[in-house]
Every structure is written in C-alpha cells, then in structure tokens.
Length: 256
Image 1 (cartoon, rainbow, N blue to C red):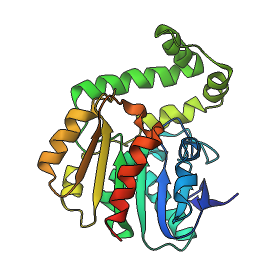
Image 2 (image 1 turned 120 degrees about the vertical axis):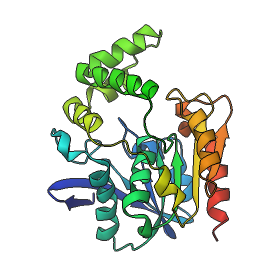
Image 3 (image 1 turned 135 degrees about the vertical axis):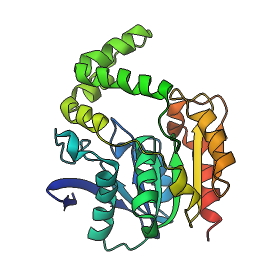
C-alpha cells in the first residue's frame, strides 16, 4: 500500500496497469474507489498506467483539521509529490468534480508536468453568488456531520441503506469542513486560455451545481478546449461509464 509524504501529510496512492500514465483524481467526499466502482480502472489499465490518489482529508490519506492545510496550490502539489515519488515527469490528468477542480489548480501551478487535462463536473469560472449560497449550505451540512446528510436524504424521500450509512459515518467531518473552507476555488479561465496542451471539459446538462451554463460560456471564451455535455445527466454522470468513457478515449486517442 504505497504512501508518499508531502510536507508532513501522508498521501495514499495506487498504481494500476502499464502504458502512458494518467493521474485519476476523485471528487469530494469520495475516494479512489470512485474510479474502480464504475469500472474505469478495469477498462483503462490494459493500455494506460493509472495513478489513483486519495485526496488529503479523504480515503487513506492523512486528514488534517486546519483550514490552512487545504489550498488549491497545496492540494495540486500533492499530485506532483505522487508523480515525483513514481519518477513520472509527465502524465495525462483526469479529475472529476473536486478532482477536476484540482486539475484546474494544476493548469495554474504545474501545467508543464502534464500531457493533457480531462476535467469533469467542474467549470473554470469564479464562484458566483448562486454557487456561494450552495457552498455555504454544503458547509453547514458538513458541520452537522453524518446526521445532517442523512436528514438531507430523508427530505427527498431517499432510503438510508446500510451501505450509505457505513459510507457517511466513516468520514472525518472536521477534516472535510476544513477542506471546504480552504482556499480551493480559483478563477482558472486565464490558465486554461494559456494552456499549451489539449484539454477536455465535460458536464451533465442537469448538473445540480449549475455547471452546464458555465461550461457553454467556457466554450465561448476558451476556444482551445473541447467541451462535452451529456443530456439528461446531473452531477453524477461520472457513474455512467458507458456515456463518459467513449468521449474520454476519443480524446486520448487524438493525441496518439
């Protein structure tokens, strides 16, 4: 079980397969299992070397409780620490949701270490007022712990299964709240406009975080990126491997 230390924070990562390296970064309140669960790892490891990383505050990585431990630059440096540990100079990067946000940070601080970027369930524009409301609402749930999330499920009539209960009670909510309060949301439009490697951005058209209209705007103001949208899909489109993976493979194949 490999780990690397980045300035006192121990990060858990896993390597699968052989070939051109791709860093896979999961989203908030998940773990690297986000890539195993829908079958991405099994589908990609025959052709690519997959580097899966548990975000700090998540999975088997360390979970500091100080807000200053969570900035986009620091979290981006975690990815570089893993790549350095593996002696990988350059890799493709694929992140979803918060993982995509980490990718935005990499385009800003470490763009020269990457062959391409695939950024899903995220958009590069600065957080607007509507998003600020959602961010604050989400923080309140984090501060309320597992029970606050269970209440949210009950409010929409969703059953709290044993699996859901086990997952949500296992989180370190103090670490997650610190993460969410950190300096993690940047305006990345300029860094994407200046990017010299291929970049694909994708979102569901029904994304609950409102990313779809921002994705359309990004396509207009950042002409050097490819924007893919999925109809009738929300923020959970990542779980729909049969929809997402063909677009990813097409993008990766275009660079061969």
